[in-house]
Length: 96
Image (cartoon, rainbow, N blue to C red; front, side, top):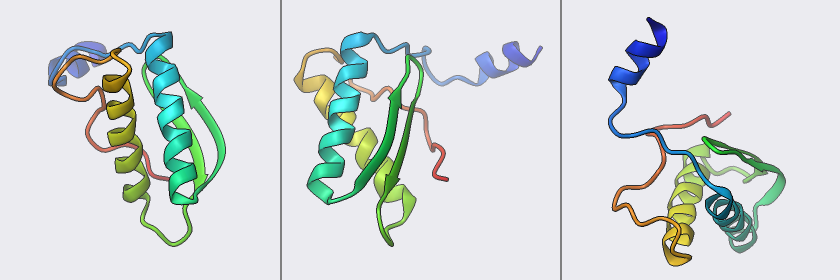
């Protein structure tokens, strides 16, 4: 019942990132941190989500989350491994 309820709530198909897409996401996150002067402590891009631990100073966590999502989508599009007009990311996201 739980699975059925959650599937009915989905706005689009479930995204499973392949190896090329995962590499593009990791590259984008690393570049974002380098450009913005953020300290990337850990990263793990999985098939259906990504984990990062990053020090961003006094900035709000939403700034980092939005930058990571936007730059990862851009990198995937530029590398040709994401052709959908919508991004692959769920709304919101953990910002702990």
